[in-house]
Length: 128
Image (tube, rainbow, N blue to C red; front, side):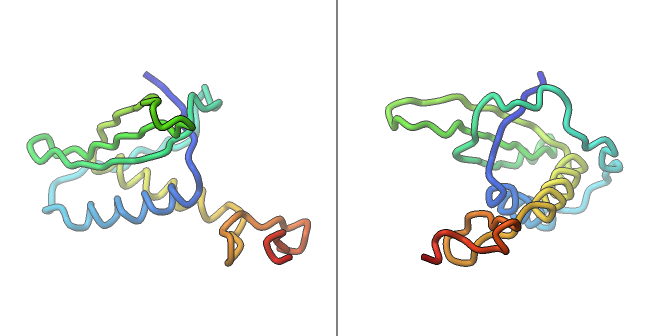
């Protein structure tokens, strides 16, 4: 099933960094080439926003398991969750894509970490 979920640039950067460390710590294994087609597919409109991410490794199958939980306003609401099983090549492709998307974005304000607006000469309202 195809689903689009939204998460923040900082989450994408942290996920890529962590997944790369996980891959580097795993024992060597024969791997296929990573997928070439990393373009987004419809639906591009997100079903929900990710609040928390969990990662596990299934040693028996050699798969990385990524669990995303919905960001909810009400702490009593459990929200939605999604579970993805990824091969090592898929994880490498995810790391590559996440880093490219993060690098293409606006730089963060060094004080509040919100994206800086180039039209404002990288000035942030938190400087007031």
